[in-house]
Structure formats: C-alpha cells, structure tokens
Length: 81
Image (cartoon, rainbow, N blue to C red; front, side, top):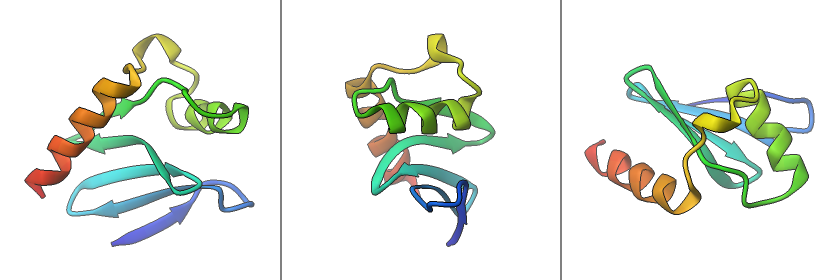
C-alpha cells in the first residue's frame, strides 16, 4: 500500500493498493477510484471535508453520490480486493 498526502496538514490522503485508490478526509473514507472511475460521497461532514472533496473532484458536486449509497458501493468494491 502506498500513501500520498494531498495537503500539508496531512488531513487529506490517498492510499493506493492493487489499483484501488481510497481518499480519506482525516480517518474517514470520502472517495475512491476503481478502474479509473471516481466515486465521491456527498458532504455529510464538516466544511473542511467539503474542501477536501473539492480537491478530489474539482468541485463536481452534481456527480457526488448520496452518502448511504456511497458506503454501500465502497464496501462492495473493497470486498472484491
């Protein structure tokens, strides 16, 4: 597994393993990338996490997934690994 910090405070990071990238805001998975497709949760957390989501998807709020659905898709994708 490889970890990349996407900001200087280390509160946003990307972990890569076997072609599966997970983006974390603090310790919470908020987005993931699988086979080149990016899945981003809607913001149900803080303003700072909202800024992290914008860093991940460039502010494409309309393409964000409702959080409950994101959790389901994320858990299913992780089981395949």
